[in-house]
Image (cartoon, one colour):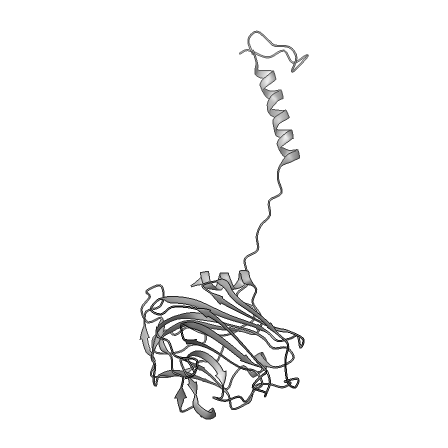
Length: 279
């Protein structure tokens, strides 16, 4: 066995070991340099899409389950169909004239002034959109068929646009409406984010397919709009209801809906994108 002369290790080259000491010295030097200059690794946090989720309508089969949140809806004629991923019995199809889902007068505290922050999101495939003058095809909303306020809201597909409407007082002028063009025939994801905590300028964001499409900031008009939603207003999916009568649907939606979510907070842009990518 050959051994290096270690008396002057790193300087003397033994005839049998050749360059071994220099190789070791070079490796030690390189490792020390790497340790000193190694970049910091940042781990990105996964967006939180579970906190604040107060209702989650899965549209599985002919039922309308709420994902364990206790707010299951009553299906009034919606027909089970495939969702945007082609999974059977994972969406509900609405006929545009009589079918809808009645969820009842729920979640009033989510929409109450002065802490009205909420997010409504879901998947939709419109067959025929409505008209703004005729009320549009109401995909989801909580209103009584009139300007009752405070905090009525709905999302419709009308005149080639997704329209989001929020009324935050009893005055007809005290509302926000935001729109973004969306065609018919294809699945798309929508999300309405509302932050009404600021009297000087409530904010409404509309997202389409995970991306921010429109932003509106508007000062609140009229009175303060304190209190919860009118107790006669019901949350409905696939239609509204006429003159605060939950048994008479109007503005019926012609298309399919699935994975409807309601949050009691205003989701951030990364969270909306995560919701879009989760299904």
